[in-house]
Length: 363
Image 1 (cartoon, rainbow, N blue to C red):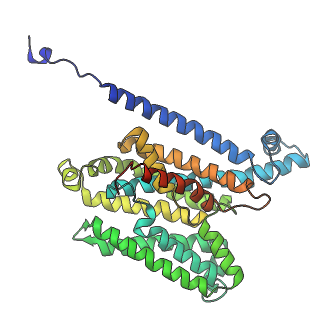
Image 2 (image 1 turned 180 degrees about the horizontal axis):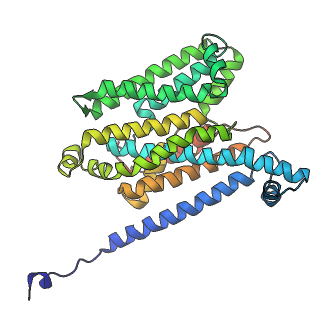
Image 3 (image 1 turned 90 degrees about the horizontal axis):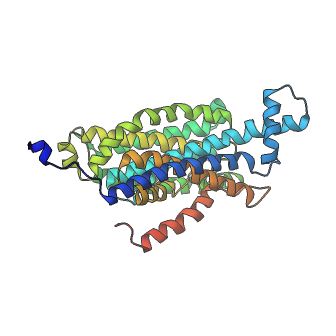
């Protein structure tokens, strides 16, 4: 008998088989939940379009139906709710994936995109645009028009990322500890500057600032959808390249290096993609918390640490939970709207506190 014949074939353990089934069910369930949430987002709201009216809306677009009811339904569906649904899916997915990458980079389940100051930087620039558009930034606001706010948020995220790279980069290496401390300092500085701007604002500007900081998908449009398409393409192209590095970093930087991972390049890529995802999300929806913390941790509880599953599952679950929160925000105080950021805080904070009390992860 040869040596190869004497070695029994590998047998999958019950634990591995159970984890594989859990991953498969998670992906199927998350996909189905996202479809259901998207349909709810399209069919629920205070504007009068219901599920029963969607066929009439489709006829109003795809035919020459001159029925004013059909035309109005088509306007609500395709000009209001569809872009809002697409933006909600992108924002939820981008924040959840950014959280998953940050947690993998820091090897800490408490890591969040806001921890490195990208959200704070984007928020500061956006707040300055809102509050100072009638004063020092009048030329900027007049020149860019409706694009002044999203462009400002993108620039704020980019500047924050650049400062972090300069502060934490040494000889081509990204010092994660320094990056974390620099992010905390930047978030505190941006928060202080935001508070100072708010203090100098009038009542209407202060109201606008408050609502924007709470996060909202109100005012979604196809222009905003078109603006985030390049960022979505960047994430889709480069996210798969982070999976192997994130899995290697699970066991430590030195171990990942010996496994063939270019650790320095991986860190820069992860930070860059986080800036892209968070900056784009802040630009179109304001500041929304807890998605980047709760969703990846929930996924890991079910699917395990493999980022080949965690990244796509986090995207699906993040998009789903934000759409659900947005639907709740639309109907809870009709005809007005509740900020979706507050809804996410009401959903995410108890879940996060429960996870801490159950000691499901180490801080």
